[in-house]
Amino acid sequence: MVIPWVFLVFGSWLLALAFVIKILNHPKRKLPPGPKPWPIIGNLNLLGSLPHKSLHHLSQKYGDLMLLKFGSKPVLIASSPEMAKEILKTHDISFASRPPLAAGKYISFNYSDMTWASYGPHWRQTRKISLTGLLNPTTLNSLEYIRVEERQTLISRLFPLSGKPILLKHRLARFTLRTINRLIMSETYCSSDASVVTHERLQWMFDEWFVLSGLINIGDWIPWLSWFDLQGYVKRMKALRKNMTEFYEYVLEDHKAKRQKEENYSPKDMVDAMLHLADDPNLEIKLTTDTMMGLIHDLVGGGTDTAATTIEWAFQELLKRPNIMEKAQQELDRAIGREGWVKEEDFSKLPYIDAIIKETFRLHPLCALIPPHYSTEDCNVAGYDIPKGTTVYVNAWSLGRNPKYWDRPEEFIPERFIENNIDIKGQNFGLLPFGSGRRKCPGYSLGIKIVRTTMANLLHGFDWKLAGDMKPEDISMDEIYGLTTHPKNPISLIMEPRLPLHLY
Ligand code: HEM
Image (cartoon, protein in one colour):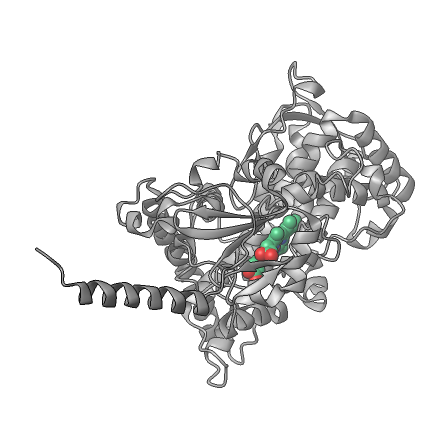
């Protein structure tokens, strides 16, 4: 068939016009450097089982602000303190949201918790509720007795195991879970006889939540594949959601029942405070059961895994370097003496232990990749155009190893933190264990209280050594990646009491 020449000319003219309009509407954007993406998968092939390390190596080639594609979606990686500051401070408001991932949908009650909520009035309200209900200095101080009781329970349960090999990991996990449950819900709600749920089941719920929240789920990045759930993650998320819903519904019903039994009931814990707010017709946004369940889960999870795993990493480092442990115990003997335990108020007297904790955060940030942020508007970062809808990871693992900021970055040297007041609350962008900016951890004060006093009392109360034939140089620092990063090979330890026996 012969196409009349008028159509050809007119058609070409239309195409040229469409091209010019497109260019005028979208002047060429200057994007950050990054590896060339493959069709369909983008750069997903470059991520190994430890994505923070894969991204760290890529940043050495492409720079400290690089743009990747996960499937078809743009993902920005900030790997230096300067770029972390750009994202979390200079452009904080543009990046204060979270990407809509399956984890938020299935295991954070359809984004109605705080952690996975997008930036906006709902998120602001959840932060306000948790700050007024629990995470403020007055309430935290009034609940110190719970932390003391649970710490003493931990110590008195460890004492009879003296001389026998134990896995500290399990003991710490159980202790932090009991403590945080009591702080938020007044009761532990878990026991070994399954009256409500067993310790093991509850622990599984949190472990599974942290793993599933951090995994790279193919369906999030290649949406047309989400239907197939190729890795089986969504199936696991749905099973977890069922368990979570059953547990939190029980907790809410139990609190409601106690409220009805008592005349002029006054809220006794964070759950009571939320139920009270749920009845408030003037609340800016209605507090739904999903939000209450999501928020309880965020706070319990936030306080459990994080503190226990930080202490576990610190012990791995100390057992590798017994001279540091000895120095810490000498500090305890000098500052506290052998006739009592360490209290929260004593901490200003223990700068060396504080330095050990900071050094642990530097080399083993719990969130090796800070949970993803998400841009809600176009913006320009360090001269590059970042489109709205870009997911952003700040690589906290890289920040702590930046040779421009840290001398001998691979070595564990607590002394680097002595006599300089290096901040860990989000002001120093070379060390961001709690994040920074609008989304930074709301549980910082509680988390650091638990880590400090537990670490100090375990070191004060016991001498620790490796079980069996294991030598310090055999301790592995390999990691398992998730929303929080754990030691891959927990070590077996033997402890002996070092204080007078009547104290245990
Ligand atoms: C050693 C202890 C802890 C560490 C290292 C830690 C670390 C972090 C980090 C890195 C973030 C992400 C910040 C960001 O996205 O920019 C975060 C967020 C969060 N943390 Fe913590 N945390 C700890 C303890 C706690 C405690 C005790 C709680 C609550 C009781 C808590 C609750 C939360 C919540 C709810 C978020 C989400 C905040 C939001 O999205 O707005 N954390 N935490």
